[in-house]
Length: 354
Image 1 (cartoon, rainbow, N blue to C red):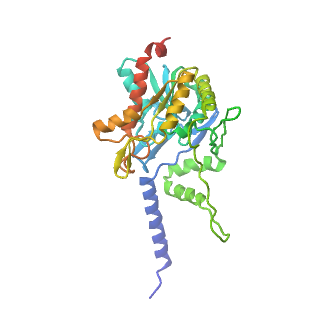
Image 2 (tube, rainbow, N blue to C red):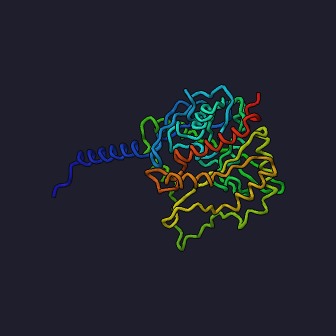
Image 3 (cartoon, one colour):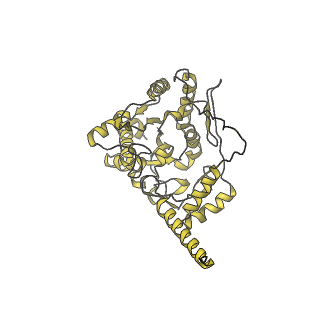
């Protein structure tokens, strides 16, 4: 049997790479370049770029000034604003710009006769602590803000003594304190990301990231177990730390803060839809701290459950993800926007006073 000629190997390699490139371009998320924004002192998503999300959901997002997505014409509106702060739930890359809670809020507010613009500033992996520092950094760039909405997708956002690398940290003390911990991107990633995006090399980038996660162990014997970080058995005992945290929220927001809890509910458990929140004790305890501090706390659990009962649709998850798991879909974003608008209507005089 004759061996295949070298050119056959090269043709096969070229075809394989072409298929891998096409698959990555069609089915993987676009690489997002970053740029330093001197006005906020942070690296943000590069303004003027467009990203496509495919792994979960199927959406397109345009980045405007200061790395903020979904801005009309890419520019911050000049009028009074309601700013939504949070993690990937607010960033909402899984739905198109028009379907995110901030943009939905803008449309609903204008329909209700309220001259307010919703702005969403979220970054995947951020916590409430990161958002507190961002409020101060973005204050001058944002202009007049009538309400700062902090969206909590999980109570881990407010758990003290659970620091993460390159994220702001919250310590119970004594005394309680917050620490900002920023990790700037490497020069290499800043140079390569625009090329990876323009050439649609999502597949190569995913393979590179996967390779970085590979850990090799050459020593003999069993692998030592790693103890996962576990929350305390009860939420009680955090009162002093939470009261301190809420004072920092009020100080950063100028006493115009609203906390919105939007858990991943309802969800499927053993083939049944459940609305039970395993963090309910934490929610109740932290809500009590908010009452003591004078911060409104909206728990969306009843609204999420009622939506499912009325429509049969889950507010989390997409056609290409497990039912009920993952990020907020368009229904979930709309429910969050509606809840915030209802709060605005109830406090219209205070929020819209000149």
